[in-house]
Image 1 (cartoon, rainbow, N blue to C red):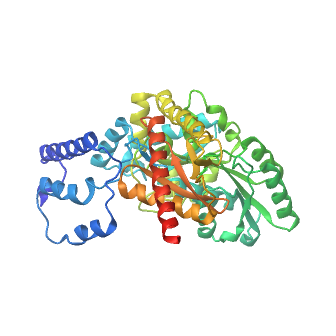
Image 2 (image 1 turned 180 degrees about the horizontal axis):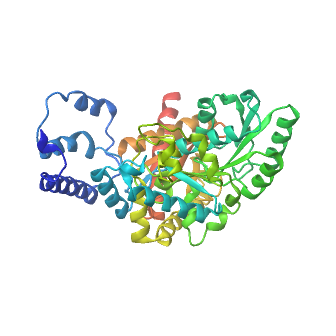
Length: 480
């Protein structure tokens, strides 16, 4: 069994095995013609359930053969131009190369004596990102597993910096379109979901500053404490960007921690043309970024950034076996001092490889392309009588619904849109997402692939309309 350990004696075995795996994936990427096969759980589950994990195949080639049947064939491929569903981006090759390197070396980024250069690379990328944001010379941060963890850590710091120890009095303000992780974080932090105050949005699905001002004033008048305001720079459903300068003014007025959830919109930090959409983010106390959404990085690659590095002390715990206090006194750079995680992958390497190969402008130009594509898609939807589109995109998300010519109940239209989404997924020809707006069922394109064209969008809209019309027609026949 030692022959499977990666070391100096097995380097050639490693090279052959990884090369074979890469070749198989490359062949799959080159020949995939649809984003999904349409396989159902009832078909796939028995194949996986029937595998005896106590009887190994013993050979990597045989395992790859098996993997073709249980995973590679039926995977949902985000690189395909008609994958239009969730915040999943196609990935750039330099980042995938970085993934291969970091997995093989297997550094753990918690302490210097486990990562050395990896620690410094991560710190340099944090400095680069805080510089792009404009947080100032005292800024710092750490890589995380994703936006949910970043939001949790930011709100933990906000709780500890709040001007009361009475958790029952603390309130968090976020738009009604903010990410669910805000409520989840409040629950995990002992505040309860009821501590999150939902602020109304305007016609563009952005948090209303007037509504936020009223909510903050009411909070104080009731004897409670405005702990934090979460402004979203790229909501999951609409890609909307809350008014950051106005939010910053209100946070300063009421002494509230300003957190910007830019998990989606962080791609604007590298944009050659759209950076101004994030004006005001430099006034935040903390910021969430997900490089694995709009920097075209493999999952996971995220970070939480803070204006004042001293606030990261609230996540610090010194363990004698790992990062004793004397290490900090000796200025040994242990990243675990800043992190909620202990063992942690060297995910920063992927972004490093990308920046050193493509440059920030290269990444930003790709994100600009999908934002421009969304604008063209909006024009297509706005001129198509079959569809109602909710809001003009700020980033790369389109929310819309099929509406038939004939007078039909809103509930029936809801069901038709749900059916169309499911039927399209089952066909494997395209993958789209769904959500609700105003209590009604809508469909959603999240455009993150520069290879997607307006022609792809038009073709998928035709497919959706066909499925919805089929559903309504069949139900009309049954009703009669």
